Image (tube, rainbow, N blue to C red; front, side, top):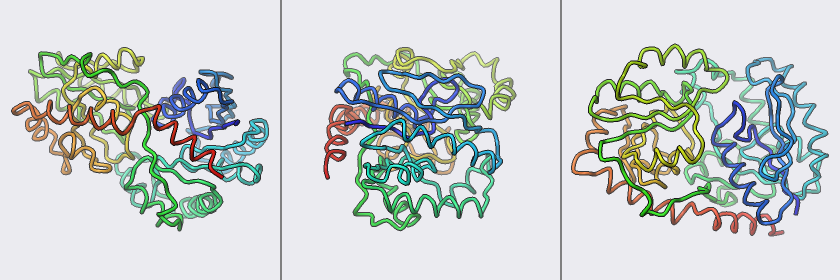
Length: 370
């Protein structure tokens, strides 16, 4: 079986978000199991892109993420057409619905087309994000056109998956899909360490894990470091291309904090060591899907402190700061070692629910079903 991922990124170069991480983890495992895997993805026009990663063939095409020109993007989309044919896959698996998903359905109608919904947007999502990021300014015409196109892609899909249960009614409402046709398939975590290998720091330690983009409101994490001088704060992540200058300006106000360590992007081994030491992972995002960062933190016994609560995961395994009461939430988690209880429960949940091998088994079963 030849499987082709359609995705906006591959967790390489300057694009290292959750979608790309999912493709690398799942694709790598499929290659290990003997499948022929390719990836159709975007790259910046001036960015060199690999042709092979982890045994996967990478078919990239230039797409200017910094451009707001609809005409420019239409030109970019024409360059994906030959790549869809070149992949010649039995299954085209889209990580969230994209324009490219619809193109693949039209170009290769006799193949299986799957959408693994990760973060569907409605009008309220755009308006919420635009409150912290002008790049998400709501355009009614663009939203209507995109929604209509995605609606057709969802209707044509042979299989619809979602990694978060709370997305089912949203997908149903946006794209007129029967919710019973949407299958819950959690995102996997590649490396879940043995619990005995997780050794927490003796000193209270709190971390941030994510892109340093306005959506994440990482400056709230930095402000917590100013308020809790006796706690160690470690920030992991770097900004996306659009936000590098903004990030540098914001960071200047916090660089002299002795209890704040800003690591930038780190490899998996270093990330695992930091998460193993940390007591709490803070994610002050204004909105999220169900971020892989949550699952990675829980897989290392970290309690969660966040202003978003997808599938009630933060309420179960941390403190849900619904009104941005992060200082109160951090105090509550530190009191009587609540963070340890929540973190241990979260670790057991991830080990039970997000095991890579079991999820790949389920995915392959769905892909092979007629």
